[in-house]
Amino acid sequence: MPRYHYIAMTAEGKKAKGTITAESAYAARRQLRSRGIHPTSVDETSKTDEDKKAMLSIFSKSSKNQLIDFTKQMATLLNSGIKLTESLSVLTMQVSDAKFKSVLTDIRDRVVTGESFTDALKDYSDYFDVIYISMVRVGEVTGSLGQSFATIAGFMEKRQRVESKIITAMVYPCVLIVFCLAAVMVLTTFVIPKIALQIARTGQELPWITKQLMNVSFILTSWWLIVVLLIIFAIGFAIRKFLKTQRGQYLRDKSILSLPVFGPLIKQRVVSRFASTLSTLLGSGLSMAESLRVVSEVTGNTLMRNAINQARERILAGADIATPLRDSGVIEPAIAHMVAVGEKSGELEKMLKSISENLESSTDVVIERLSAAVEPVIIVVMAAIIGVIAYATILPILEVSAGKF
Image 1 (cartoon, rainbow, N blue to C red):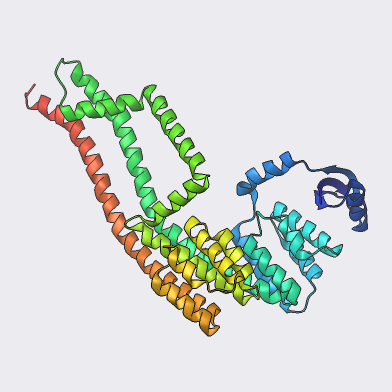
Image 2 (image 1 turned 45 degrees about the horizontal axis):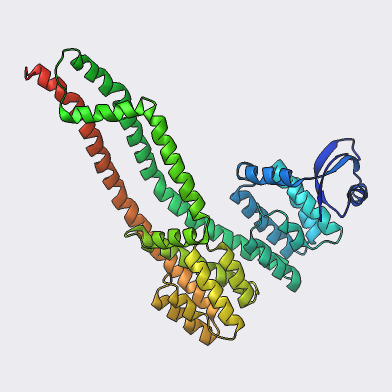
């Protein structure tokens, strides 16, 4: 159904605006009047408007913490016996973010008019992903919506915890690299040119290493920098276009998993996410085939997605899922064997949960070790680069002072 942007006056005389889904502008006005709101303007939102909102969603969408809080509170209210519409009304009033409040208001109003809660969530994919919507659908159909929200909240908190550990481990190395690049830029664009200019005025020849740094400085301070940046931009644009193709995504993901140090870590992360997500979906009551479809959409790795899709086809054909997972090259044979054992014993959900927990523990250890090893390496490399620049800067001064010119 089309969506309409409205401007209206409330019963208290306050101005209100937002979006509403209806079959026509007349139906939209009727819905608004049924809520006690008197519309002054109702206009259908164009595709262009929706595209602009999608482009800006990264800056304005609700934070993960806010969404987790909403989900936990929904679980508490629903499990306390409060109706869905009343729960939505309570949480809508206490949300501070204006855009998220508008989203919840629209969802609540659509549920009040008889629309499915799941269908209302689908229009806001910036907030509710396919996993969220699928689990809500199961809860809505089975009448266990409160339990579904509790499961979703636990899953989101667990996923955020893992992502936070990875981000935290990357912060310090990134800060070191930025400071190193800044120091190199200052020395090559300001310090060395001034010293070299003073020495060049004496008519003496500069040392070889100083000449090379002068060439770098020339590139960084002239129009050649624009040429270099344009070349880099063109290469980056071409790579980005290629990576949007199926072939490009496949080669990218295969190359990432083949990296000497970070490849195994990323592979563990992919498999852990697969096992955790599939276990959660199966535990929420979703069928195996539907769970695999959802997991394939959020896996983020082409090789894993292909393996999951093959597993889903085998399930629909009455076969097992362990074989395509083993053949994918992403999942280790031992883990694939554990999946096969869990499938045969009828405890696949528990086995997947155990696999996920073991991989997460192993990933934490690897991240800590990598962080401990990478930081001193970066410091040594930074010291070497800055040392070379300092040597190239001081060498001509020392030679002049020693009378070698």
